[in-house]
Each structure stands twice: as structure tokens, then as C-alpha cells.
Image (cartoon, rainbow, N blue to C red; front, side, top):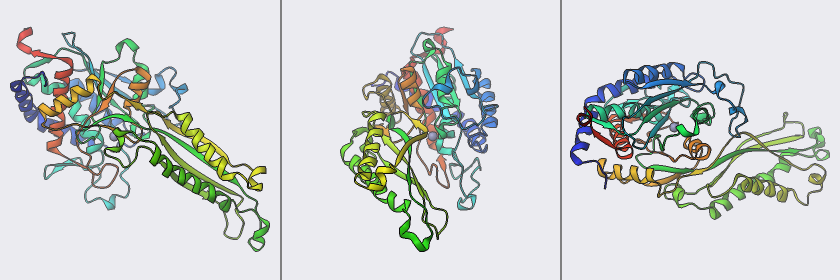
Length: 436
Ligand SMILES: [Zn+2]
């Protein structure tokens, strides 16, 4: 049972209702800013101003200024500058000595694709028929607006939180989080780490407590060029790649059958995947191609190591090439490149998981199931780099990364209420009058 009295829950729910027009307006302004990677500044300025208005002590953290970030294994620099691309941190110190809590949300969005495929402006940032419309409404500017207002909702209801609350608006989550949450985590002293972190990604009010690790790799196969009329004099790199492609495709099927984690499979068909993403070969229809290059993404479960999955891929390529005299002199090359994400897992029995589940049950009348997410999420930096439990809990997923993304306003309200109650349950609270 939640420690929050029924009557207190009702008061917070009423204050969310009172605040809703303001929360909605703020969410609309965020959505109307096209914050694709590299263009986060204007929205971050809105967040700074709003947190300031709501009484937070606001600072910024820019990845360029974080010592040692470039040597972190997940930092994947691509020569983009972090100038004018701050992460925003708002702190609210409590009078009590309750547990501290940090809300983290990303302000960046994925590009909208062809705007003609949308039935409204992708950056509409407007509410129509009870829906907040536009790229980022679900993922995750709605959640971001909700977390910015969660403490306000508690205080307007006449309560004060007994633990410190921090609100963090970060950049670059969609690209791997290294200039965003990684920067804020590395920037924070170990003794200033919160006791738990909640990220209101669009989880549909379930809980994401684990995620797969992700690695990219490239297989390069050499051939021998010849004129098309003498095609048998050459060695066709595409033909040489085919058995490797097939073996990797089989590895995907095999890992689907052998790698299991219930957290993932209760909502997803399989725990891990191997996606064959790009294939480039040849340059002219009447020449034998002398090179073929395949790029792929492989994921690994929290209970596996990256080294294990890398060895599985490399052994698969070696086996597919074995016995071919051409490959003996020209072995296929496997390279691990680009961004890599670590897996992470918080125990289903962790206090923060049980706290959120109690709040969902008593405060929102929902059953919040603990799940794994089959890709990279920012919570992993808190879990792996700061030994801090971090989970995702937020509103619904409505066409995220697709066309016509939206968020029902009632879910915006419900997310705000949920986060407010999580803060009360986790940090503890008292009537504001008690302290006066
Ligand atoms: Zn997201």
C-alpha cells in the first residue's frame, strides 16, 4: 500500500487539474521547437525559463566541459560541436532528509520524415480534440513537461517534499545519449548522486527496468575485378558475401531461440536481435565487384557480455568462410564501429521499482509491469556509471518515430500526477503548514 493518504492523493490530483492548462501550454511550446539533434538550444532556453519561474536553482552542463567524457567507451564523437547545446539541470533542495529523486528527460526528437505523410504540421505544438500534436509529443516532450511540473503539483496541493528533487532536460538521447545524460552523470560528484532516477519515456505507464546492449559491426569481403564479358575470370565479392549474410541471418534466428529474458519477452517476441542493415557492393553493372560491405546491429541481453556476442558474430563469419580457398588468402574482415550502448538492469525488487508500482496501483489505478527495452536508453548511464537505480515510467506511446505522433492530454495529466505521487512516496512529504 502506498503511504500517501487517499485524501492527499485527491488534493494532488486536483492541483494537477488546476495546472493542466499551464502544463499543456508548456508542452505545446516544446513540441513546436524542431529540436532534432544539434538544434536543441531554443527548447532548452524554454526549460531554463520555466524551471526558473517554478523556483528551481538552474544550471547547465555542456558536454565539451565535462572532463574525461571523450575516453568513455560509449562516447561516439562525430565532430559535432556541443557549443550552445546545453543540458539543463534544475535543483530543488528540501528541508527534510528524505531520499532524493532525479527526473531526467530528453528534449531532442527524431526527424519527422516526409511532412506530406503527416496529417498535420509535424511541429504543430497544438492541442486538437484532446490531443497534443507533433513530433516529440509522446517521445518525450509530454513526459518532460510532466516532470517539470510534478513538484509544483505537490506544492500547490499544500505539501512539501522531504527529499531533494532534481529535474534534468538533456540533449542527444536519440543519438545515444553521450552528449546528454552521459555528460550530466559524469559531471556530477559521486556523493551528489540521487537515490533514484525516473525517466518519463513513453512506457505506457509500465516500467522499463532493463535494456539490451547494442553494437554495430561491418563485414568487408574482397573480390577480384574483371570485365563482365570475362566474368568467370573475376571473383564476385557479392557471391562471396552471400553465405556470410545467410550465416548471420541464421545467427539471429538461433539467438532468438536461445537467449531469453522474461522482462523482454512478456511484451516483445524476442530478447535480442541481429539486424542486417546495409549492403554496399560493386560500382558498375558490367564489372565484377571487387568488394562487398555489410553493416549490421547486434544486441545483447543484460545477462550476456558484449565480448560474448562479439565472439559469436566473429565465429559465425569465420565458419561461413571456412573451406573456401579464396577466403584462405583473403579472409573476410569484421570491424566493430561507431556507437555502442551498454546493457543495464535494475532488480525487479528494487525500492524504486516497488515505489512506482505502488503509486501506479493506488494513485492511477494501473498495473505497472516491469519490462526490458530492446535497445539503448539513458537510464543505463546512471545504472552503470553511477551505481544509481534508474527506471523509465511515463505516458503512452502514440506513433513515436512515425508519422502523426501525438499524446492525449489526459495522459499528460496522468503522467504529471504519477510523477508527483512518485516524488511524495519516494522522498516523503509533509503538510506545508507543519513547517510554518
Ligand atoms: Zn525517447
